[in-house]
Length: 299
Ligand SMILES: Cc1cc2nc3c(=O)[nH]c(=O)nc-3n(C[C@H](O)[C@H](O)[C@H](O)COP(=O)(O)O)c2cc1C
Image (tube, rainbow, N blue to C red; front, top):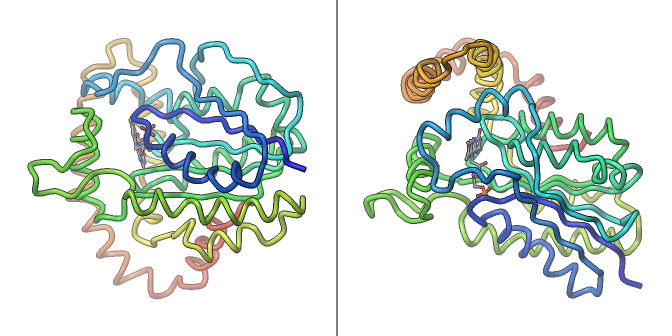
């Protein structure tokens, strides 16, 4: 008999919606009943973004301040599986997704229920996911699978192209020189394979080994340099967020943060990575392997 699945997510551009449609196609084909909720913030975030609005969400993202969603009603009081689509904003769960996690009716159905999380990120989703893992644990959910799709181009290229996408609202090639921003269409299509793996475990009700199968299919790839930059940036973002949230006039501080971000990525990060590659990384291979294993996993 088909199982009951709740799919809940927020997507601004629709990219995460496309990812979820690809993921759930095999689950629908197998005869499961799927209830999909694409939440909407009570006040929509602008898309395309203005520079000011984009940076203005940083402190609340980093500090985990939930927002408000337009009301929605779940049809069931319990589900066999919940698929949650999230996006990282400033290395944190996006405000709409954080609001989903804290929503009383979502929390009620999360308890004792198998959960699969999926994101379509630029390339830094680890810190956001660590916070989501913690929140799911607090809600008593059973995280059984995690999938992270990313833009696979070099970090500085995806930095340029995502800003073009976010500020122009078009997922198109910037100047016809840069590659298309976001997650590649082929990677979105490949999500069907993850959906089939999930279906196998859903029908047996036994999720042991699901995450290993997903990893085998490249549902998550953890790259050392990105993991390293993210771990440093997360702490620095927290300091910026702490300072900015206390200011009455935040505008000048947010502009300073914007320039910090550009300098950090294009100047500081390559220097720090080079120093690390020479003096630290060669002596920390055991620790790095353990860290990667942790981020690949669901605990
Ligand atoms: C305000 C903002 C901050 C973002 N910060 C990050 C980030 O820290 N790491 C990352 O990988 N992607 C980041 N992104 C990209 C999103 O995770 C996501 O890939 C993109 O917004 C498309 O998602 P959508 O389906 O909601 O349109 C950010 C996007 C926005 C709008």
